[in-house]
Length: 328
Image (cartoon, rainbow, N blue to C red; front, side, top):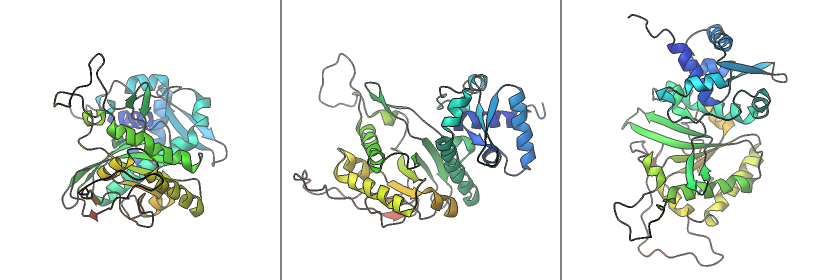
């Protein structure tokens, strides 16, 4: 029974292509097999293509870079694997035109996931290729949902090892700053959303009543990370101001900010220094620079909390950052 899992490397390659939606040859190599020569990765992808499991498009203005994606057959095969149980197959999988039109955003999401993966390897932390999961569906009722660009699972193996989770939103400056900030509304709603059972009157809260839907999947609500790309320093500052201004405008956001860190960082800084470096800016205090893994200490509740007066901002919360020894 030696070497019985001869298809293990092929299986990982297909799983990564399917889950990440799209990846270049170089990205695939760095994700699945950075310790071997890239020619081996090229041969593996060519083999999967011959078997009808993956296909590719070529970007004419990027040095004829090859971009890989799973075919419909590849999606059907991979969707039965337990390691992809949280994965939701995309529509128009085998459509080359659809792949070409969404390649910019999707490859940026893949590059973001690769940055976390490589950073974990350097630090001795645990973040495997399939621990970065794009587009996880989180229902809000009435057909609405929050679908982050990615969900990240990350185990910090340092002093006081901890399991971290984060929603990752990648913004390439294709929408206005206000629309970017509006995403906070959806996350505030998800944090508070409790579905009401059909046919049951509202009653006083009891232990048997429904709880927030996110608690069915997570021990704690994941952190929220905005990765900013596609613009220069002035554009980054504009988007940070929009996120900061939303604190006083988004209903329920103060409860989310008391529970988790909400951070933003330019992709160029993440790629240069690594995601664990202090390149992240809390939206409450954009002048501050922190690590996304820093321990978060919620501020003490005021003795007599009061609602904000009309046309006056809600008081901002404070932040505490220490050693990453808590779960969150």
